[in-house]
Length: 144
Image 1 (cartoon, helix red, strand yellow):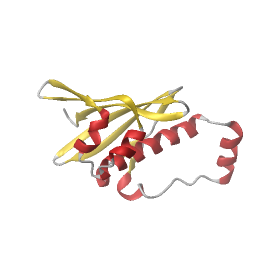
Image 2 (cartoon, helix red, strand yellow):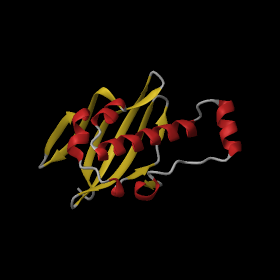
Image 3 (cartoon, helix red, strand yellow):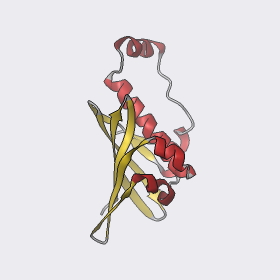
């Protein structure tokens, strides 16, 4: 799996060759185009969380989205709308994996550091009304 390190690339946009863009426009929303769209949503969501921008994060999530994690053998569950304020995202440590799209559902692995802890977050998205929305984050510590 390729991980996208945002410490260098989070301000740079992907540039595709004109031929690939022309094919994507001709064929419509291809899987590659959908994967890129999902990765863009994930990048924008983590940037919003890193900036503490609750409104921007809320626009990228479904109203019923949830955050799940486990601490001390207990399941944590909070509305995802609360996660950006609690997350302490340092964008220099965020690495976004490749999107895996299956119809109107997608999954992306995100790795990041939170203080001394290395985290893995599996982010699921669903396409609603033509737009990708974050539905859940399942978080675990690396090596846990």
